[in-house]
Amino acid sequence: MKSFPTLFALLLATPALSASVAPRTHDDPRGIIPVTAPPVSAGQRACSELPRRQLTLADLVDVALCRNPQTAASWATVRAAAAQIGVARSAELPGVNLGIGPTLSSSKSFQTTGFIDSNGNLVSGSSVLTQINSSARLAVNYLIFDGGGRRAQIDATTAQQRAALANYADAAQGVVLTVVTAYNSLAANRANEAANLANLAFARQSRDLAAARKTAGVATAADQLQGETSLAQAELTLIQTRGAIATASAQLAVAAGLPPTQSLDLASPPPLPSGDLLKLGADALIADAERLRPDIIAARANADAAAANVRAAQSAGRPSVTIQASNTLSAIDTTIDRNVSSAGLSLSVPLFSGWNTRYTIASARARLEQQQALVEQTRQQAGLTVYSNYVALDNALSSLATARVLVKSATQSADLAQGRYKSGAGTYADLLNAQNALASARQQLVQSEFNVRTANAQLARAVGGIGEAIDEQR
Image 1 (tube, rainbow, N blue to C red):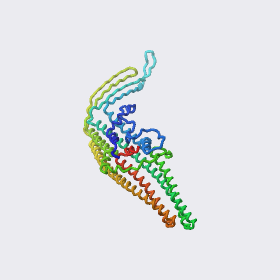
Image 2 (image 1 turned 120 degrees about the horizontal axis):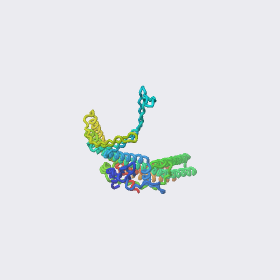
Image 3 (image 1 turned 60 degrees about the horizontal axis):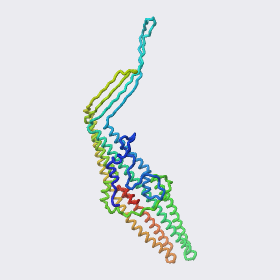
Image 4 (image 1 turned 45 degrees about the vertical axis):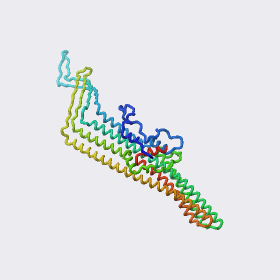
């Protein structure tokens, strides 16, 4: 890998890039909530059905990024954070409220005595009054100055959305590494199966050779029994490996967001990494990590949000100016009896709040210091992770070279031991030792190849460029 992509770095540095293409809807009238998650790398394919062909590692990564619940949950957090920007920006606009309500009222009055009307009838001294009082009030309130509080809240929510987007990138890259590791594990188990089949064939040859020599009277029954035991052990190892293949296949399917019983027709694994990442040097990789790692970007965004929260807390102790206007219309039954309009400018000056504002500012500053410390902690941990994986890849490549030499020498030794036993110049114990050494060497070669593939992916993940590493295999 010659260099790492800047696609995610650009998206994280300019969140408006994803928000600008969001459609305006009833729930998002500003068009600031992103709809489609940004790609992990430039080569990532759009979500679609599972390809009807042999699947490559890149195919499985693309499927996982679309279907894995972890990425879906993280992306929902990004959308929620974007919506909070709209909540903060709502303070830039006036608030308009309309209140309408009828009220039914009934009143009764009573007197202890009645009176006689002109017709000589006795009239009671009580009376009843029933009427409907209606009112409608339209009020407008607009905060035109608040000491920078609104701007600080908008900056805080914008920074929080950057942090959420960075966390999504981190989760997505984690999903990619999980898929790569599961894929490598399945490939290693299948390579183990091939090695076990070769071991089984060699053990069968040795058993047959011991049986033939016993029949010829030049070997003991112990040689034949040892041959049978060695063959049974090889068969048992093969059965266990095939069980591990079934488990690894289910783990890969789940990592890709598919059912564990999903049958996966996989293409041949890509060539082993050549270790190009090591050519860049540890210092250069650490510098790339500080620029690209999503967790560092998220930590810096959280620090920006904390700084904005300090400004928001400070604004609470400053004067604010609000424009207010209202019109109230009232009626009794169907007759309008009052129409009241008002407009005014209100200046609010906080004088004393029991030192609430001062302690709120002090708390916000302490949180800012905490976030700044977390940025440095995350940066240092990232450097250590990169260097540790750098050393691990270097060791894995060295071990692979040694494992290849070991298999070559063990194969020659086993062939020689088998030939010596056949000619009567060697013992069956020597043949079994050489056979076991060959089986162990083949196992170590498979493990070494798995270690190289996984260590390369882990280093790319540690730097923040695992998506580009996948693109190189497309």
